[in-house]
Image (cartoon, rainbow, N blue to C red; front, side):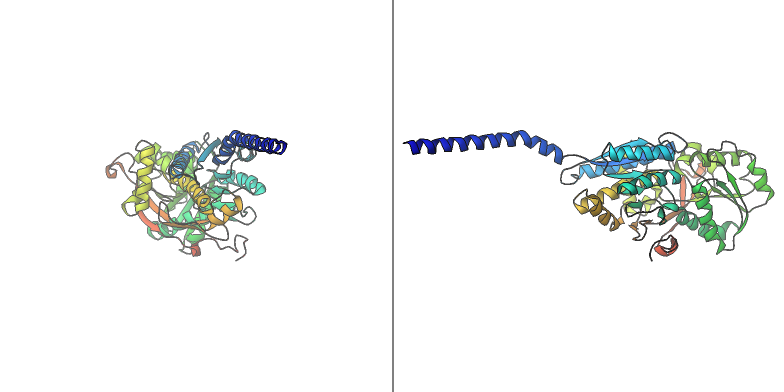
Length: 415
């Protein structure tokens, strides 16, 4: 009887312990589920204030679409993604501070963004020290060079060598060989001018002058007499954002456009939308994306339709498409890797290729530069435009291959 009592007591104890374990499990299960459901965080530092604010707003819209598509498709085994947008104020130090906060405080898994060549280098310096993936969506040649690059650095955007080179190869034989540059006096402007000169030399281009202006110039009137006195056939304007808008508007107001042809290696969509047909009419330039590509490219039509559905009928701009691709490719790599583990995602992102929105794109292995097409466009006049978003005519598409890039050895990478 005693033995039976002891057996019963033992059974009761085991049942009590089991019940306690089940109860403990029930108590801790929500915490486990909560931990597993931590979102995949994409840090997104961009200049929401400052001269490039319009471009920053565009890239955020594109990134929002990428997040929505990933989440609507079920995320990573049910884990959703989250976009953490921060204002870098177009300032390298501010960008570094925001990026550190995103990684250390907000626990961002990956960083995408930046709309300035100088600012992106500051962001990249932080991410490579912390071994966090950074997919940059701003034009830069420097970020590809070995001294600034790291295994964690990816460059979704075109670079100046690609953009300016494609425009030079199209325009110089058709428009004239005697040129003057009007160049923003910082890294982006210098790199655009260098890329144009590199391609132009092989075409017999003669550079009469490279006239520099400070970032944030509001009055270009003093530059125009110097330019016209040199009697160029072509004026090549190497600037960005608000600088470009003001330069083109004043070139029109002062009659410069009537005396010399104007090229912009990178012709800005947002600026053209703001300032209208007159200031930009007839100007030729390069761009990474224009919504009119949908006439020949099904993936562009898909992007346009999805973007318009999310953003009240608005077509994506060039920089909106970059915001989309920059985030979408990182999340595609996460899905391919099946994890947010940085090293595994790096490997998966290096292998990303295909037609996401503009034709085939892949990352070159030595520097993680996105190899992609460059569109040559001309700004339409008012009579040609079907609506207020119909602003460019696609003149040509230069399909890019690695032979047109700066070589890996030139950038300081092993061949």
